[in-house]
Image 1: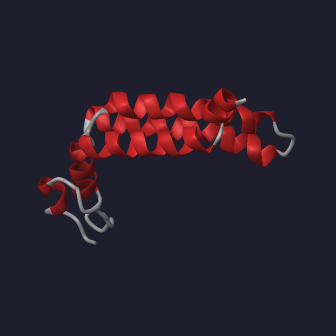
Image 2: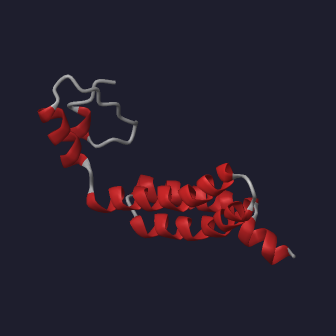
Length: 108
C-alpha cells in the first residue's frame, strides 16, 4: 500500500513539481521529463475517475511538463525577440530568472 501511495499520491505529485521546477530553473530538460514520468501515475488515476473534468486534467498534466521540457530544450529567447519585432505593440512579461536579452524587450 505504501508503494501505491508513493507512486500515485501526494509525494509523487509534489516530487514531480519540484523536480520539474528545478529543471526549468537550471535549464535541464531531462529533469522535466522525470517530473512528467512521476506525475503520470496520478494522471492515470484522474483519467479513471468518472467526471470529464478529471479526464481533461489527467491528460493535460503530463503534457504541460512535456511542453515545458521542449521550451527549455530549444531555448525560446529567439522566439520572444522575433515576436516583439513582428508585434511591437505586444506585451512581454518576464520572470526574475529571465535572460538579459529578453529583459531588454520586456514590458513588465
